[in-house]
Length: 203
Image (cartoon, rainbow, N blue to C red; front, side):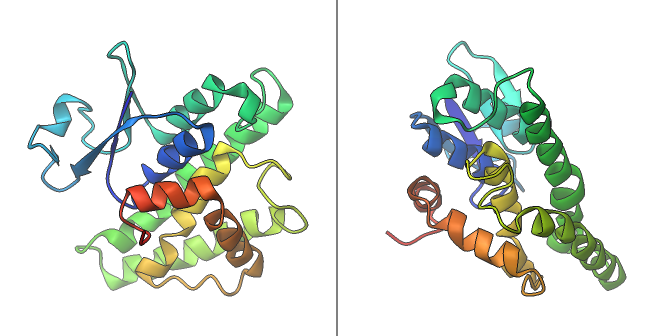
């Protein structure tokens, strides 16, 4: 398999999932502005959407969209318990979190990375994020991870998006549960492996 990624982008989520799963995968660094891969290839030939992540399977099929990719990875190694079994209420809860992180947290960060976004737009994004942060912060009170004591692929995604806060000057201190969660997830060996492989953590 090949994972097309950009350092620190949302593709970090499936990268962490692969490390947690113990699955070896070729990493292909991708420039999101030029849409070129490290070897100069046109990334849009892999994923016409033009954004990461994209996972090329061994049979040549391409999966895009992070929440789909991480569930695919989790289902390859059910013994790792990175996702509850399909058809269970617990799996629906996982999908609920993945959808929430995707639509309400991930996308709300977008204006803060957009150099053309106005200050009013960015202020609105920060206010929206503050409201959205309340949801996982409350869920994490008294538990280690989103689904309880088992780390799941939903945590790969939430950790990735919350890690952007420091880069765009979003203060997480009003939500101590989120700060503690970030530290807890960052300490996991598989997470550190993914961060090192993307050049985000010194060797």
